[in-house]
Length: 258
Image (tube, rainbow, N blue to C red; front, side, top):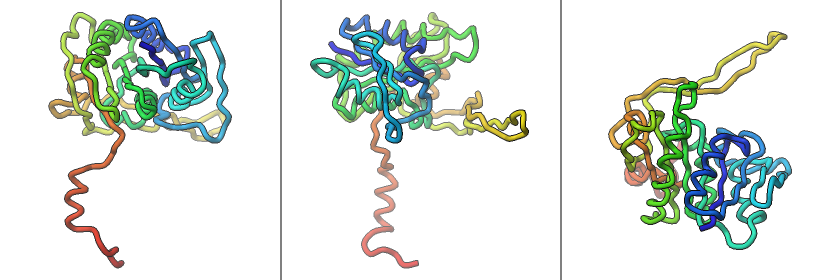
């Protein structure tokens, strides 16, 4: 099995090294195409206004001055020799990619690009990492190989990516995996922190507040809060089917007049 690895934290990220260790438990045919610099929050951006350059680290490892989407596309079309990959793995991200965050995630976007190019794809993220005591990446490394192998055995639709998130718990406390749906927080966690430079000019750091929501049953949020591994099938059709059905009853035909 040929596996392409990417991420959004960059070619030197600890999570990418963890992902390579995970992948090598599944195959020895591993290719790595990852951003030269961190691309967190890049979503599915494609670099169009600047040239994209490739630095060859070794014959199967490339650092790319672009987004995760650029990396997967270049890997598939230019860099991988011979047959295209059988699987794309994106991660392991530093921090969870759940709920409404998935639309901003470069990690999830890397998997989406793999799916869009016809290859089964999985995004992997590890909750936590904010404190030295966090059991970082060891939970993902312990459980991801078995889960990925089982997902490959089961299979999933061609227009779906699998989004795996691992809880921030000691390894011995993680005993369950749950197939979940994407949640939505009832609190606002994103914020802009204003600061001033030495000349008195304001600038901003974008970030997240560490606030818990009250998530619904069956969601990725609740699974992680309660210490379970979350497996969420995602697709890029953002249409809200119920609203389409309801609005067709009241809007359609001749355009309404102002």
